[in-house]
Amino acid sequence: MHGLGELEAAVMDVLWRAPGPVKVRDVLDRLDTGRQLAYTTVLTVLDNLHRKGWAQRELVGKAYHYEATTSRAEAAANAVRELVNASGDPDGVLLHFARSASEHETELLRKALPKRSRKT
Amino acid sequence: MTVAVALLVTAGLMGVLAPRQLLRLVTRGADPLVPLLAWLASAVSVVTTSALAVTLLLLPDHGTDALALAHECWSSLEHGMAPRVEATGGVIGLVLLTGLLIRLAVLSVKGARHRARRRRDHLAALRVAARREPGSPSTLWLDHDEPLAFSLAGTPGVVVATEGLNRRLTDEQVHAVLAHERAHLDGRHHLLVAAGDALSTLLPFLPLFRRTPGVVRELVEVAADAAAVRACGVETVRTALLGVSGHRAPGSALAMGRDSVEVRLALLAHTHRRPDSARSLLAYGTACVTALTVPVITAFAGLLAVILVACH
Image (cartoon, each protein chain N blue to C red):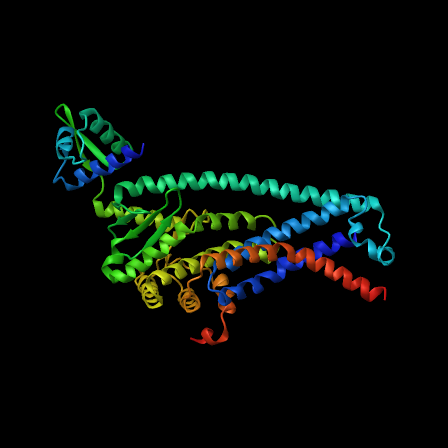
């Protein structure tokens, strides 16, 4: 399962590097995963990516041509937006480095500080 | 009856008065985990003391054996409440507490499932969009200009960072930010946050419980800052914190309040010593045991004082 996720990332990398829509065979040729992959494996991964909304496809002749739905930068921005939204969630699965504390808790901790450092 | 009431009163007092005292510990010791654990233990202690009180109401001798020496005086203090009333009170209390504990268990299980699902969703998106830098834990880099850093719980947890950190901070400062996030993962801070959230649902009318979620979140940040300070020095962590909190797009939901930054910077000054592990284990143990026993000891001390004053 983990391996499939790595493959998805590798295939998306190929799509992002490609100048335009590519065929499954082209993706297979450009993949650099250190092992020989079957055509059907790549086909399955591309199908998954299409289903998940990462890639779009177009039927040209008899074969599908695939391309990424968003640019790499947009994908990163979307991931950031999702994380930022989630860091406000109360579920605590994510901790954010510069999370804004509520005024109430800030005040509590400020009161705990010795007077000398309160002024600075 | 009197013992049970005394226990309930001290439990209630603890729920109201403990927060201020516990936060004082933050600036005393080198280790923010001591007040954090003491806080959680205090909350547990309020619950166990209340449970003890209602159980005593149900026992035939109401736990008065423990004070058999003061028996004569004792009977004069008893107000002759009918045993049936006490038993009814005990049953109601016990049912209430059991109900709350069952609710806590159900919420905890639901919360754990919810968190696992959220984690899978985040990882699925990150695996494709981020560049993975192997390590323990591994770091996922997102090509984004805002300097941001997160830690995502799990086994193994991951650190998520944006390239904005590399663009706006020095290598040393980036190192400090990553050390902070790794400290969250190493210290299982996400679990502490989840435990605090769950505990707070038990008796939300007491400040000790109501404030738990916010305080735990604050204290794990302080603890992670302390770890970053040990790895990179106060000054680096200080400038990293200022750098990250200063480069936020105006109006962003995450813009860190100036007050929050100030408090964290002020606390940094108190956390530069490296706690040695044996001593900190002893401190954690003492903090928990103290928090757990304080209400019971106070209740009995109070009762003894009343007996001494009333029957001398």
